[in-house]
Image (cartoon, rainbow, N blue to C red):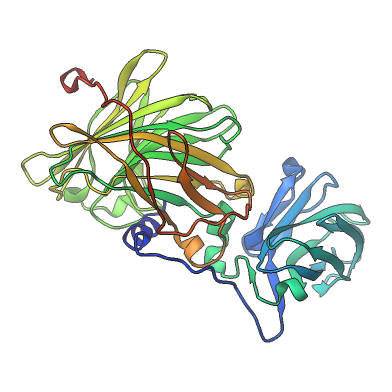
Length: 431
């Protein structure tokens, strides 16, 4: 979770009433959709083809690889699709372009980028359009280098939504993050947050981070790192703002107080810096997991944060880690959850998560019964808007990725009566 993105969305999130915009070039109604920020290898990922953050589709050698480009229309009507592409020097190729049930073969010749012939499609429902590129034949090693999808026509007359800012290409391919900001039912000193998380079956895509107990200085949740590895992750940011943990002054470093069994600890950077802990644990989709977080001042100008995870197989709370954050004197603030994808190559896949039964403790347990929905800067900048939240029968949900078309206005509030009994936790017996 990039710290600068987090700070901006949190303080602006509750105020945002986003009016969906477009990356419009209204003078010509012709749009150049860069593959660098809007394309993915959706089939045959092992074939060597890549989406370069600067050059688009490259290293396209396998006819098993399919590249998909996405953009969103605001109205219906005809669209003309062209490519800006080139072949290897002295070679030529034939590729297939398809979208909305239509397809055409295109000849790619010449080592200089040029526009291809067009494919005409009919958009019957406003929303995201997926355009697929597949190699048919080639005389050289690669089918083509493709930098842009060129779009024009009636369905584009009110603009298109796509990633047009190179600073956002990486974030757009990851997809927009989205968040639930819980309304705290207490004006007292809150020392514990409790939450339960269920990832529905099939929604546990690689690259997903389902963050359960977020607070003003860090986050705690579960993620999918690979086909064989999953983690419980707990991190606390340093009060010194930097992406380089080595630059943090000694008196502002996060200090480890304790850690649980099989827990790895260390520093993290690149997206803010601080102390990080994780335990490899193969949690399962479809099961509900419990999270408990404590945050209290130590009386010396610092605050101690401790995270526990309830392991169903042991029927017991396990400590993940406890960190001391210097130059901090606070109880828990800004209870929130979020959903993100941290793998750009997986950004075309959808994911969803349910958060339920939230409680805070200020001397007694108090139920959370209201949230607001917010989004990150990728969404705010109208680079990509497939993110939403709402209520379920038992709690709240977040969904992102997959280029779906439903819209939930950022800043929307949701109320849900928590009819569950308070957590029964003996704080003195926690490990």
